[in-house]
Image (cartoon, rainbow, N blue to C red):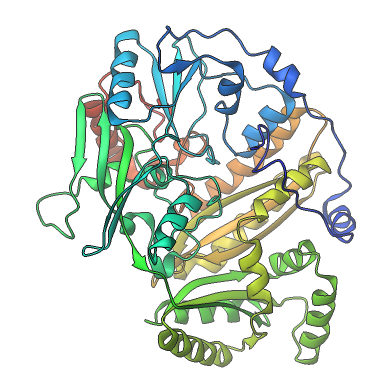
Length: 532
């Protein structure tokens, strides 16, 4: 069963190694075990529904609770404390395009706001109801999850927008194909959600981001259906697919999508490499990103993430072996871990591995084989469960990310993390901050930052700590001309910063586009852009 106030399946736990809590205590202080609000307490506080009766809508409190928040840290604080605030007034589970259209018509006739809901994995407030007098209806697309069409000649597959990652892959794998889109939220996130937020998978260097994979589809909008044909390329004006990519439910509700698929790779492997320092690692991944090798993933951790990752892995013997062996080759405390993957047919993978390691050696890297890569591959979708365990021990965990050009990336990453480390200095609270580069491009890369800090017994104080860290980091990202979001989307949390990237003129254009498709601004208001 899915947790109502945390990440993932309630039957799955992420046990901590004995060394983890002493490590966190030494770095940021001892965490407090703080009791959470019970499910009964939270259910009892849910207000009466304000949405008019409709056969497709349920006002059941449990349904409303499980659709009230996503997976951001503010969401966790709200759910765990029971201070949730706003709830959807009703939930609907449509199973056809016509039912989605009917619900949109119902909302317009009754002035009900609509929130499209995929897997509930948003970390920036995409699915959160905002306070106000207007009733709110959440449209859960989980019933629109079927594998609808497979065209082997065109290598296209069509799924309902509510299809989750594991379902998509299992259906395609049965016939020898893959989509290859593997975000960390893969277990629960959906095809429609990926498209609506411009998602990027862990192996996007090989398979492409979702904008490369999305070939066309069907969207129900307040002014009528929008059909996007699956044309391989076109010069017939602007690409309307890009109206939908990243639209976050503001233009319409995606009901199905055709995606570009590939045959399953016959060979794939992940390797671990150590560099003596960050600069050497950055030099290597920059060179690798500019090759045409069959590399599917590059993930370079800084020294603190390298240390923390090894401790959190619980592989004490591996850590001892790694540290002893690396010291013999003068790899000290500043060592940085690179995990890289190669994917494709046997010959291209063999060639890619050989030439990638040649570049790595020339940049001072030391390959440790597949052991670390295998550990990463095995745990790639279970790492989010660590948030549950650390929360229960008194620690809050969150992430933020950006992308920027190679020319500024080193200084920017240092400045952002330094700003975050000092964001709670006036409260005498320390923060553990670490990062990695991922999603490499010829002109730059994504900087992905994880931070851990102590919870307060007062949920409002924990939220205030998060706000101070998030705001400080966001302004520093803007200062270095980075994007406010490389892969998490905009939602509510990032909306105040979007104008810095899009400009006033760009925001005005987006507002006009949304108003055209949604004249009453009933679709997910307050998300993506703040101005309504």
